[in-house]
Image 1 (cartoon, helix red, strand yellow):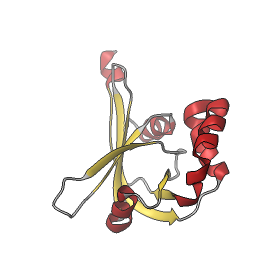
Image 2: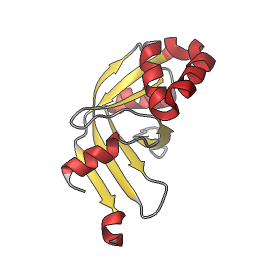
Image 3: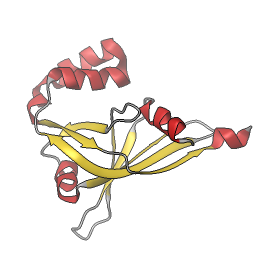
Length: 142
């Protein structure tokens, strides 16, 4: 993919697999997460600030985010980069915007209502895309 194509692809709605190193004798942690991204910007993850993944991300300071299509011919973008900030608090509005990206307005309303009690323990993790690996098999399919 060209730089513009890869950024546009990452800005589409995909569930990402986020991978972070674990120095406790275990393999890297890989976990699916919702994310937000706008071309030229940072990847933003909103997740439980007390979770193992967040603890590992804080310690490692770098992650890989991989997003892919589920249908053939496949397309994917795998992006590695540094964590630039971790906001230790998020608002219900921030969570709603991310939920709306994946579930639409009505789905986001229901999701936020059902999970309102977790907002106070959520954080927002910002990642600067630095190294990209991409593939667009639709180009090969012609």
